[in-house]
Image (cartoon, rainbow, N blue to C red; front, side, top):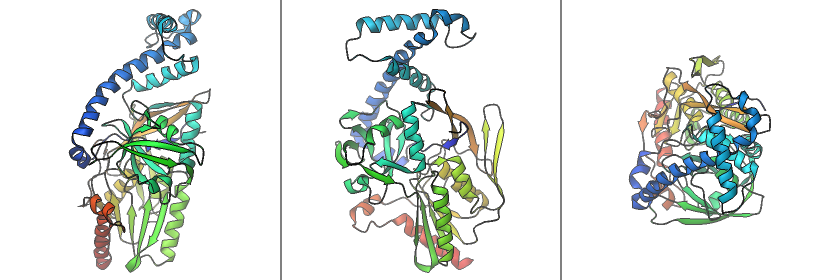
Length: 436
């Protein structure tokens, strides 16, 4: 695997992960969710401290007395730390009452605790097994429930951002914005998104029970799903009336580039006169994927640029040879994040299309996968990204040109699922097509 591989995390999805919650979710959760948030806040703080403490203790095994001379001056791992860790190890060996924890688990705790200390939900440690799972997800094929997820940082719980057509998640009735509280009765508070997803996924045909928090409900909800083999269709094309092409992109995986290219070709061959690009609930994904897809529609110029902590700038550009020649409307919402915001931001900066919906998530930082020699890896935030006009939208998001709140009550109440945002996008596109 290429150690320079970069992700606009779904997580993230890196996806991861999720850092900012939508305003409409802040106001409607009620006392049930508010109490949960307050409880989790204290619990997570304690858990983080304990996690770091327990994790760091086994570092003494690797350094030991003979390795003290090799400790680097100014490093957090100094002689006092090693001695304290050795003392903690003796305390655990002598007094710890619950199930015995092996060295490998303790060592993983060290690494996770070290990354946790960064207080960055996007910087995480992957064991070799977790790394394999993560890479499998970015390829778009896995066995699970068929739901897209981010980490909600108000609660630090996994949040469903979308479900795949025909997948177990859709059949069970899971919805976007559902928060996963427990998997098979085990609470996931304090877990990374990757750890929680690993528990949700499993062999095809096996069952998993999810305990869910849903806005508007006064108690937890439980869903039992049968896992299935899922090949994520990350791009969906529908030709609509008046020559309008509707292209939905659910995330940016390795398979997405070819799927998007095929959808564009079919749409053009079908007489496309205007296009609606749906990036709602898109949690992001791979940098290379979104750059390659932007090259298929943008004019000549910058797509995005990044700057690291040293001020080094890296630019990603488009030659403009395949600039989209029909009117374009882009649907966005509070779950449109990272790579989705790169595409939406570039389209807005160039005036290539109009954005309809609600303010995007606001994730303007980039993660890089750095593999380690034992097969594990860290994913760490390495830079900030900027739209072609020089905007960093981290923590702010991208404002739509036309605000249209999603009517979820009508969508879930009616069997045909009326989508008021899509209808608004069609209205705006028709007007643009008439003016062209």
